[in-house]
Length: 454
Ligand SMILES: [Cu+2]
Image 1 (cartoon, rainbow, N blue to C red):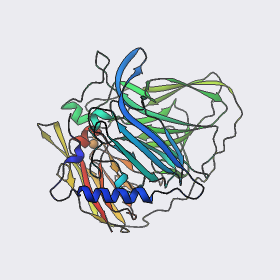
Image 2: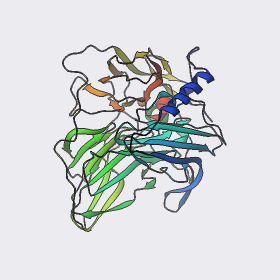
Image 3: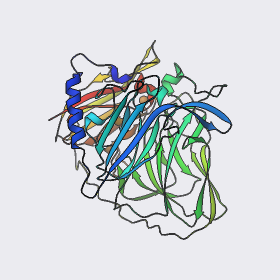
Image 4: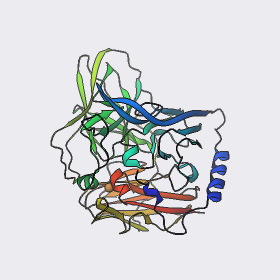
């Protein structure tokens, strides 16, 4: 078992067990549902389970509650989620709540809590502040634990959500199996450079399944890219669809497109349809050069939509979805440069770093002080930059403004490129982190931890 990357600290930055316990107890007590809202109680058991990623092949997966993905947690803004994690694995684990703006003590990393050991339980409790499509996943020994299946979706709805004929969650992933049907252990060199891209593509834990959708209807699809390293340039059979949301919920207005880039850990909410009875529509990823050794030359299938008999539609796609106020208008001076770099080394073959330091200890930020960060990529591969616990707005990609304004927690930094982001640390002091969400890069050091201070 390899240790979690979260465990590399500089002396003096580790909070004491008493400090951690106090922060946890405060966050637990503060998590109260809004008036008229409820506590959504969920038991999650991390354990080994037999699972058929591929029909006819039984794989010993690592799962939450026996399925891959784990159960989709569904709730409404203002609810409190209380998740009791029981660890039945033979190694520690923790659950990170990806994209949720919750207190640091509930972030689920080895930095803010002692990992949950075999046989132990730990209860996460937090209020849901935002509607959108989120996910949860192990944040310990990730190249093994996520790859084997320790992840699931978390959907937060709001009374203001637009109305569709159906609301589906599609979690994309891939896996590499050995001849005996078991998940291949992490590799070295090329895999450390590219990250693991399994040759078996999964939709909701199954290889290229078929789903059925009624003709004449428009559905909301919540897509989660749970892959270790695979970039998905999503295409729905080459048809036009509307992007309606990203990591941090709805965008301002629907954006009609034929493809959407979903880097590892990204989410995309799209309005799909209407289709005609009898059609077969491919859910696939188009070829994309992300600088990896392994190239994709053809579209790659995740699943197929079979269009059944027509059903009446009540879907209404409004012109305005919500108001997103820009954090920055006019020119601005960045107050941090985050440099994503690499070197060659013996441990992983390729080592990754931030500001020339593996597991970088970054400067603190102060509550209420606007952050404008330039994130530059000094390497020949794309990196998906993930900030824990806070949404940011992308101001520029390689000097150009993005196609639309959105709230993100993960954004692609192109090979040898640069993005500029802005975010506001609200009043949730504590220890946070940012890292590349290619799990092999994260494990090889492309991460930083920092304090949000009052
Ligand atoms: Cu990376």
